[in-house]
Amino acid sequence: MRYASWMDELGEGFIGEMLKAAQNPKMISFAGGLPALELFPDQALQRCFQRVFEEQGKRALQYSQTAGHPPLRQWLAQQHNRHGKPVTMEEIAVTTGSQQGLSLVAQTFLDPGDVVFVETPTYIGAIQAFISFRAQMMMVPCDEQGIIPEELEKMLKRITPKFLYLIPNYQNPTGKVMGLERRIELLRVAQVYDLLVVEDNPYGELRFEGERIPSLIELGDHVIYLGTFSKVLSPGLRVGYVVANEDIIHHLCQTKEGVDLHSNNLTQRAVFEFLKDGLLPEHILNLRTVYKERRLAMVQAIEKYIGDEVEMIIPSGGLFLWARFKNISNSYDYVQETIRQNVLYVPGQLFYSDGRVTSEVRLNYSCSTPEIIDEGIQRLARAIRK
Ligand SMILES: Cc1ncc(COP(=O)(O)O)c(C=O)c1O
Image 1 (spheres, rainbow, N blue to C red):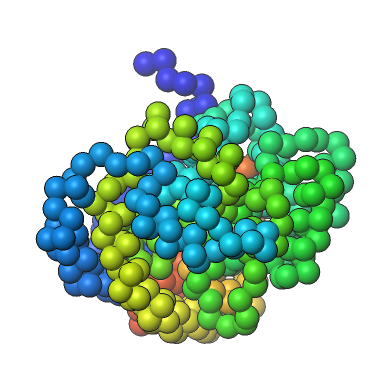
Image 2 (cartoon, rainbow, N blue to C red; image 1 turned 45 degrees about the vertical axis):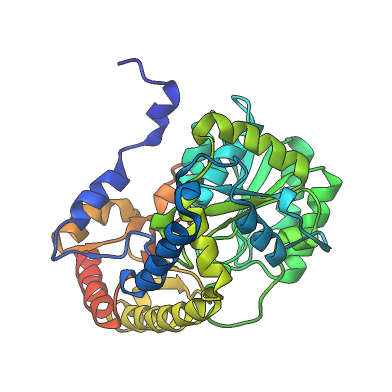
C-alpha cells in the first residue's frame, strides 16, 4: 500500500504493544493515562442519559450544530473568561475530546513544513496530531516550571512558528506546573512576537495542593484553550471543547464540518444534564482525594524500593510522575524486562519529538490502588536492576 509519508514517522507502534501487554491480568500498568474506573459516576450519568431520552426524545438523536449543543456551550462560556472579559457562547466549540481540538487546530493552522514549538518533553498525542499535518516540531528548553521565556525569545528571533503548544498545569508527561509570573512573562514574549499560544489543560482541576493559577487564556490575548471532561468525568464520553476568539472558532468549525459534522449530540446533552445538576464539583473533590493518596503511595514506594537510584518530580496534581533512573542510560531498553516482570511504564523517549535517548520514565498512579502501586514499584525496581 502507498500510505502517506508521515506514517513512517510514527515509530514502532509502542502504544499498541503496551495495550496488548496490558491485557495480561497479572500486569500492573503505570503506562496509560487512565482515570480510576471505579470512580466513574456511572449511575448519575445513566440517569442523565435517561432524562435526555425522556425529556428531549428524538431531538437528541438528530444531527445538530457543528459548534456544539448550545446550552452546553453557554454553560462552558460561564466557566471561563478570556483576557479578563467574560466568554460568550460564540467563543466556544465542543469537540470530540481535546484530542480532536488538537487535531482541528493542526488542520486549521498548519501547512506542510510549518514549525510548531513544543515543550521539552511533551504529550505524545500532540506530537502525533502535529506530524500528521506535516509539521516540523521544535522543542523549547524547559526548567522545573516548563518553558523558559528567555529561551523561547531566543528561538523566536530566528524562527517564526505557527504556534506554541503547551500544558501549563500538571504537564503530561512531567507533572510540572508553570507559575503565575512565568505565565505572564511567557505571554509578554508571545505578544511581542505575535505568537499564537495553544494552551492544553486537561489536568488543571486535579489539584492536590497549592492555589489555582489563572490560565493563559485568562491572562493574555492570542491564546487557544483546549478543555476536556475526560479526566474529570469520563474519557469514554469523548466530550472536550475549545475556547478562542470568534474568528478562530469559526475557522475551527469549518474544519470540523469536514471531519465529523459535529460531536455526539446525545452525549453532549447528557453531560450538560450532569453539569446542570451541579454534580461535577463534588466529584472533582473526590478525585483529588483519591489521586492524592495514590500519588503519595507511589512516591513512598519509589523511595522505599528504588531510593537513591532515581530522581523524581513529585507532582502537585494530575495523573503522572516523571522519574529519571541514575544507573541506566536508556529506559526504552528495559521495556521487555519490565513486561517479563508484569509491570509497564512509558519510556521517556516517546515524549521527545526528536526521539532522543533518555533514562526517564512516565509513571501513572491514578488507576491503581496504593497496594497495587507498592507491588508494581517493587517489580519495576527488580526489572531496572537486571
Ligand atoms: C495533555 C493532553 N492533551 C489531550 C489529551 C486528550 O484527551 P481527550 O480524552 O480529551 O481527547 C490528553 C490525554 O491523555 C492529554 O494528556
